[in-house]
Each structure stands twice: as structure tokens, then as C-alpha cells.
Amino acid sequence: MFGNAMPQPAFYIFKCEQSSPPGMPKPSCVNQSNADLFQYLAQSLMQKGIIGTVQPIRTSCLNRCSLGPIMLVEPGHFLYVGLTKEKIDRVINEHIIEGNPVNEFLIPEQFWGDAISPKQMMNMAGYR
Ligand code: FES
Image 1: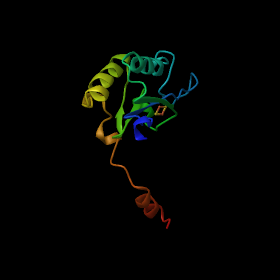
Image 2: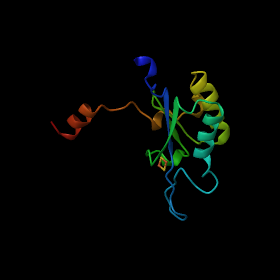
Image 3: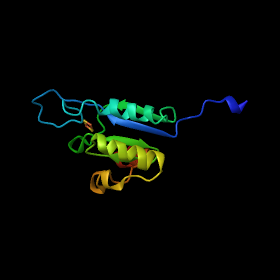
Image 4: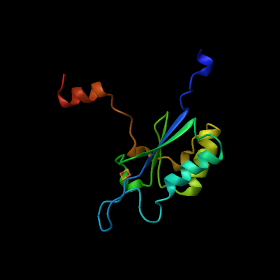
């Protein structure tokens, strides 16, 4: 019975697809020069035959806009910043396929502190 079960993905890749209108002072992850990065990511996964077990997902702002373009790889909360096609290639080959996160492309620690659990946050905010 379980032999026919549809396997869950091994990875989810959340690519920020937020764009701001021209002239907005706040930076965003998508502009005219990099608008094809999600398509590049999805096509690269397809070409390698791993699109089913690696699920690319378009997402909106993940609140690290000044470091964009960004994408979050789960599991593990690996946030890659300053993306280019070359960086996407290396993340797919080294992290997704070989299992070695590309540390040099990850967000600096000062911008990605340890997570606060929902219970901790409720306590901090005075909720019970
Ligand atoms: S616009 Fe991408 S993180 Fe905010």
C-alpha cells in the first residue's frame, strides 16, 4: 500500500518574488534586470530531473529586502542572498544535490539570528 504513496518533497525553495514600482525608495528582490531568476531556478531543477522532490515556490517579501534577491531553502532555514544565476547553479549542485550548503552565499549571521518560538514571543508580548 505504501509503495504507491506519493513521496513528499525533500526540499522546498522559497524565492522572494516581491517587486516595488520604479522610484520606490525601499529595495525589493525583483527588478527588470533579475526578473527571470525564478524561471531560471525552476528550469534548472527540471533539466536536472529533480523538480518533483525539490519544490520551487514563489513567495512575497521575507523581510530581508536590502539583501535581495533572496531565496530560502527548507528544511534548515538556509537563506541565500544576493542571488544570481551562477549562485543558483551552485546552490542546486552543492546544497540540493550534494548536501553541502554554500556558506559564502548565506545571509550574514547578524541579519539572521536564532528563531524565537511562538511561546517565547507570546510571553515577550504579554499574551498568555
Ligand atoms: S522584497 Fe524580497 S525580502 Fe523583501
